[in-house]
Amino acid sequence: MKRIYLTVDDHLTEINTLEKGCWVHLQNPTREEINGLTARFALDPTYLPAALDEEESARIDRNDDQTLIIVDVPYVEADDNGYSYTTVPMGIVMVDDVIITVSTRDSSIIADFTEERIRGFWTFKRTRFILQLLYRNASRYLMYLKQIDKASSQVQERMQHSLRNNELLQMMALEKSLVYFSTSLKGNEMVMEKMMRMDILRKYPEDAELLDDVIVENRQAIEMCVIYRDIMSSSTDAFASIISNNQNTVMKILTSVTVVLSVPTLLASLWGMNTPVPFQQSPYGFWIVLGISLLLGSLAAVVLWRKQMF
Image (cartoon, rainbow, N blue to C red):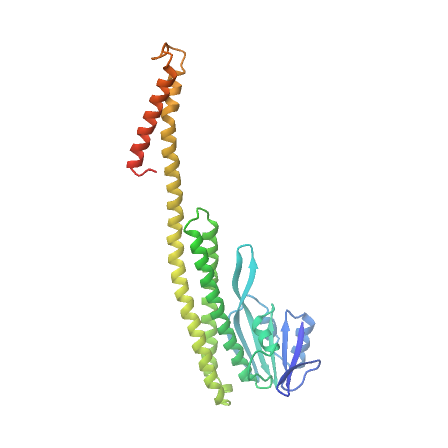
């Protein structure tokens, strides 16, 4: 899908044709759309397809007057265990007087721009647009990191009284999401540091401060990710031990109950043999045997209780 936007009278307008200063957004584009833009702007044929490769790493590449920036953006989707977090690449291409963004999935970051939730956004101010994209991206990482931390706290609360592995698997899934976030954030940081050295920023010194803000926001996300990973890793190990201990406690109780119940079972088996047994002639033989069984069973229960087997 291809959409073209242009800022007209300080408002974002969707247009049908390419114009100077416009923004072209490609979401999961067709081969015809890629080939059409590549031919129209004489782009490096590897630029647009690169962002469609979900294994592509964050990087920045320049070829004459063409610039390709690939960053990883966070993505959340619902699954059986609640929500899963991952990252997908998004490509940004600057060529002539046009900026092109391309991604495989619908992004809430792009929606923030198309729905005009970003102040001071103009399609023809390409450098600022890129920095605003990167700043919004880092902010979205921070938001998702807080969601992951909240989800982790909820899972940990359930794990305190759980004997199942389901909560432990949820914790491992959240920890895996943090690994994805950490790797992507560090890759994005390398892209930003390289942008600091590029001449496009020397042309627009007023945007250098915005780039500093982007780097600070991204570093804050990296630090939060590291902290959450360390906490979650130690919590996962601790709660794995708790689940194992809870299961051992249940097994200990079941074993103790089995021992207590085996005493009357043993006596019943002995007095059930087809041989002469004590009290067989007594009219109170049954009650005597039952009393002995209860006495020995109670004695066994008391002994096990004192040994903290219950």
